[in-house]
Image (cartoon, rainbow, N blue to C red):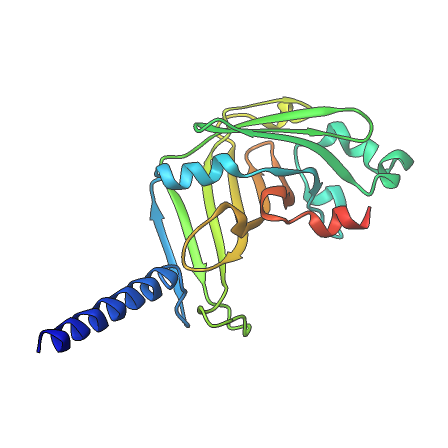
Length: 222
């Protein structure tokens, strides 16, 4: 009888252990049909992710077929944009981006050597967006979600070729984009998009995130 009870107890211990491992393994599993968008504070966990984000050393200026006619605030570099030096460089800006826990500093440098910087204080609220895009990415742990961290705030200051476009209140909209499971991690985010809007500003930069592997393909081709 005691032997039977001991075997039964051992069975339940194994069963509970297996259940615990399965539950832990699927703690970050995403559910089919996920669609979530909510506003929250940038808590310590999300701030830690933001501190780990590394930007690629290059960024691009978003431009439509209208060219600079659709852009406001970048007249200081408009003439340089068609220069052979810029064209040979592929139209990329060299970038240096830092985050100190309270905000970002973006510095862009043109192939002609002109620099411009923006200081963007982190807002008190952010938007988190997670969605199943139904692309068949389920590998047994649920779908691979499309993700965004969105930040909208007021530009603190601008300098260099960006200085003349920043008059209060000029706003910024910074989005980190990527794919991942139900838990957020720095490796999920592969791209960024930065839009500046104001009385004297209307322009947008975008690029890849080194920390998420967004620039691996580009690096391997160089």
